[in-house]
Length: 342
Image (cartoon, rainbow, N blue to C red; front, side, top):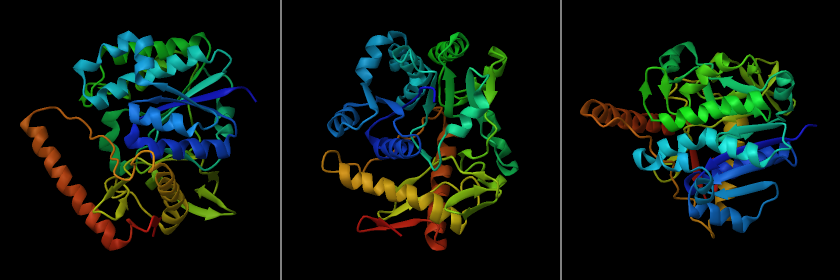
């Protein structure tokens, strides 16, 4: 098997999710190296103490010292926007430090593998860049303004074509990378729509088992058979994108399915979300003596600072709270009691 290297980034607020990604990758792609850009010292210090195999760490300070162009954008962007700005530059950093790697693939920190990613690479034999579509449901068509493709998985072969596309992406994110839609631009993600026009060797991943997520799960029938999560009875689930998983109301863990008008079946609860949440809780229990993860919260998204947006954000916050109450009442939420999810 050709050498395939992965990279991601997160701070201490996402550390349990990042470790869940790491452990799931090690189970299904044993020995795969995962480079982590630690976005604050709490994250870097904790992962250094854990000293996990195949986990290669860089602090944000180390990264910024080698990419001063990216570092120079920090003062003009919100924290989440700066993190987005780092995405392609971090990929390029890893590519330059892994010259023997055939592929370097960026993974969002809230992915979780259920099967080997090997089947994805079978689609990429002639490709130099791999991107993955959102596959929004018809009910979520309004989200297409955020881009056709999702940053959850972006792969590049370590060859001139792959490097060229990632360098273009890096330059664009340095030029503009904000957490709102501006024409065809949105954060680091909107630029992916331009990738197919940059090279004939850009491949859109077709396997629907890759990047199943709240915004697209409504397109498919999900069931569990022969110890595997199956999509439309034909495609095994390779990895799920757990965007929107969060704690609330003291004892509950919520998902974002109601927000995306997505189904949440018994099979999905038991065989997709339960294993992930169990792993998060186990990680938090193990790491809490070093770093108090139980109270960690993902960063809030930034917003355009006008009264219209302010009011829209307030309405959205109220809506989320109402959705959470509905999830508690209907059994969609997980109750955490004595470190276990029920």
